[in-house]
Length: 64
Length: 406
Image (cartoon, rainbow over the protein chains, first blue to last red):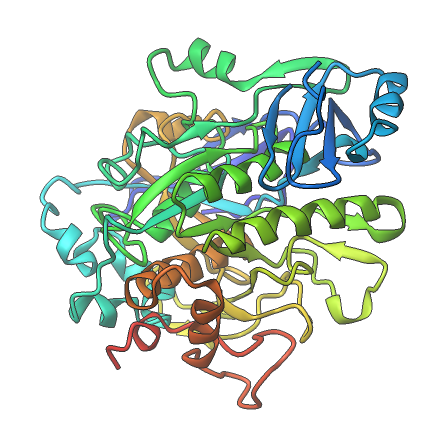
C-alpha cells in the first residue's frame, strides 16, 4: 500500500490490497479527487451573510 | 432567509449586496452582519483496503472484537474500548451523537440501522464557490438517485461516524449501539460554509443531540476575523446551555496553540468544547502490528496546554485509523463497489474516539457537558506522567475507565 500525499490533490494514487493473509497483486488505482477550490488565498465568500441579533429574538420587521 | 435561531440570536441570509448588508446592520436590534466564508475541511491522509468475507460476522454488533478488521484496530485496544464491550458497555440507541461533517452513508454495512434518517439533514443548501453556485444535493441526485441528501460524497463523515458507532462487521467503533445523526455541513469539494457549521450546531442543540462531533478545521486570524469568535461563542454556548457536549478536533498543522496568540485555532479556543489532540504508534511491524509506542503524540497534531483537553488515537507516521468507507464517495470511487474500510490519519480521527466515550458517559451522567468533560479528563491515561501536558491535555482517553468498568 502506498500513502497518499496530503489533501487536497487533483490526483492521488490509491493503493488497494486484499485483506487476506495472501494478498492479491496490489493494483494501483488512480483516484480523481474533487478539485480543491480554496487551497490558498481567500477568504472566499459563500454569498450569504450571518446576522447577529442584539438579543435572543428576531427584531421586528427582520424578515421583511 | 437561509435559517434563523432566535434562541441563539443568529440568522443567515442570502442575496444581500454589500449595501444591503450595511443597511441591515444599521437596523435596530441588529448587532452585526458578517459575510459568510468557506472553511477548508482539514482532510487527513488516507489509505484504502477492501473488506472481504464479512458475511459471517453477524454476531459482531454485540461482540465488536469479532469485526473482520479488528486485528488492525490498535486504536480501539489502546483506549480499552474492547474492555468496555466485554463489560457490556456497547452504547445506547437512546443516546444520539450528531456528526457535523460531510454526511454519512447509511448503506454501509457497518452503519445500517445506526443512522437516524429522520433527523439527518443536509444543511449546505446552495452557496457560491468562486463565483459559481453549488448545491450538493443536486450532485447526490445525479450520481446516486434515491439516496438521501445527507449521504457522504466525500469519505470523511462516514469514517468519523463509524468510529463513534459501528455494527462492527468490517471495523469496530467505540460503541455499537449509539444512534448517529448525520448533519452535512461540509461538501465533497472539501469546503464548509461557516454559516452551515453554525447552523449545524444550532440544529443539533434543537434536535436532541447528546454529543456533537466536529472533526472540522479552520484557523482564523483574530485580527481580521474577530467577529467569528463572537459568533462561535454565541453558538456553542447556546448548545452547551441545552446540555450538548461538543467534541472538536485540534487540527493537523503541528501548531503550538499556547504561543500563537493571533490565531483562533479551530474550535478549541471556545471554552464550551472538549478539544482533542491525536496520538499514534511511531512504527508498526505490519498492518496488524506489532506497534511501537502507540501513545506517541502524532507528528501533525496541534498542541498546547491551554487548548488540549484530552488526546486520542488518530494515527501517526505509517499507522492509520480504519473505519467504514462511504459507498457514495466520489473521492474514492472504488468504495462504491463493495464494503470497504479506509485508513485515515488526523485529529479528525481522534475526536470521534472521545465522542464515543462521551456517549457512554451520557448514559451514566446525563446530559451534562461539564461533568462529562471532567470525567473524560479524570479517567484518561497519562502517558506523559506529569498531569497536564501540551500534547495530551489531561491524558489519552480511556473508554473503559471513563465508563467505570476498570
